[in-house]
Length: 385
Image (cartoon, rainbow, N blue to C red):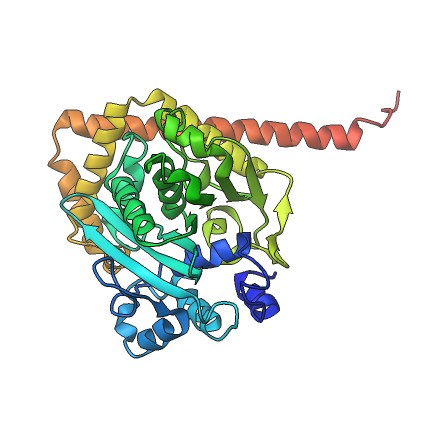
């Protein structure tokens, strides 16, 4: 089915001056932000900007910059997307600036962002989602018990700096954690800057703790938030989403629908569904039930211990983690056995509770399916006497 790559074939000849930025452009910029633009785009500390076409040409000369797992169906398409953008009239002259890419293992932070300027006064600030680092995934899970994680603080500081440097109006966006960062940043910059934000796009990014949604800053910009979720969304249904969300069709199944390249496009819009799939609603119901039974302190302990076990393998990235599965499994088992008995008990208890909730949902789903089948088959027929 058509996706953002097809969109470039259909509308790549339409410059932004002729056809203003739309929701599909948002996804293109949000996905491009996963690229490592180090050495190709001016940083926060550097003046000026570079065209997208020139940035793409620079990266061609330094292929080692593509550090994400190229076997991934998502990351392997990033260079293709960039090349198609560079060859299109719509994107090739877009100016890129203010690039930052920071990973701190000590502070458990993974943060990356840059600015795409379609003209001198119209800017799309794109926040990257979680990359291949374990610390990035740890930070994602920390959102379940912290009101603010390091990347969210960095997003606010970054946005205020960018908006103080550039004149005009701003769109914010990101995919996965990047969508969360875009909304969080827009909600927490100074109230004087918020009117310059036109829209904030959250593309299947996790929600927020209730305290964040109820904050004055969030409420001031709530009507500017556009949330897009694939029909079997998992990531985007984590925590709380405020307001209405749009459900996008995907040619993948289950969790793989998180891959933005699977989202279906027609013209300048996504292909929409009436609502989330039953499977998505059921799974997220189970996940929420589980989270409701786990205190914030238990969530923190769980994440801390989980990543202590994972990091015992010596891996810093998911790619490294999957390279020697047997050795990594042995290292994790050895680390688990060294934990205090009460810590082992907590991990076992929380996992057992989680799988118990999942089983409840599966049983309920199967019962509903059988009931629906019986109704459709016999409901309107008179049984023989």
